[in-house]
Amino acid sequence: MSAAALVALCTQKHLRVATAESCTGGLVAGAITAIPGASAIFTHGFVTYANEAKMEMLGVPAAMLAAHGAVSSEVASAMAQGAIKCAHAALAVSTTGIAGPDGGSAEKPVGTVWFGLATPLGVTTYHRIFPGNRDDVRRASTDFALALLQQGAEA
Image (cartoon, rainbow, N blue to C red; front, side, top):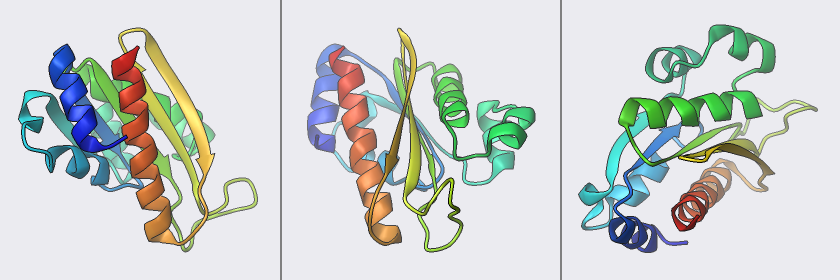
C-alpha cells in the first residue's frame, strides 16, 4: 500500500487518520504527509518515543508499561486508542518496537514490532519480527503500518 493510495482512499471515504509512533519516529506520519492533499485526512502524528511521552500524550497507563513493557500488544493497543481519542480520528495506527541494533532480548529480539489499529469497531494488534538492520526494520514497520491503515479504511 502506498501512502498516495491511502490518502486517496481516506479522502474518498472522508476518514480522518492519526498515528502514534515509537520505533518509527514519525516515519508513518511523514509518509502520509508527503502526499499532496494529505491535509484533508491527516490530523495528528504523535511521536512517543519515551515511555513518559506514551503516558502524557496518549494516556498509556504507567502500570501497563511496567507490567508488559513498551514493546507489547497491550501498549500498542493503548497507544492506538489514545491517538484516536486525542485526535478525534476515525483511524489510528501505532508502532512500538525494537529497531536495533541494541535493545533486543531472547523474548523480544531486535526487529520485534507491535502495531495497533484503532477503528470505530475497536482495536486490533499485530506482531511482526522484521529482519535486517535498523533502517530495514523501520522501513518495513512503516510499510506495514500504512497497509494496516488501508485495511482499516477498507473495512
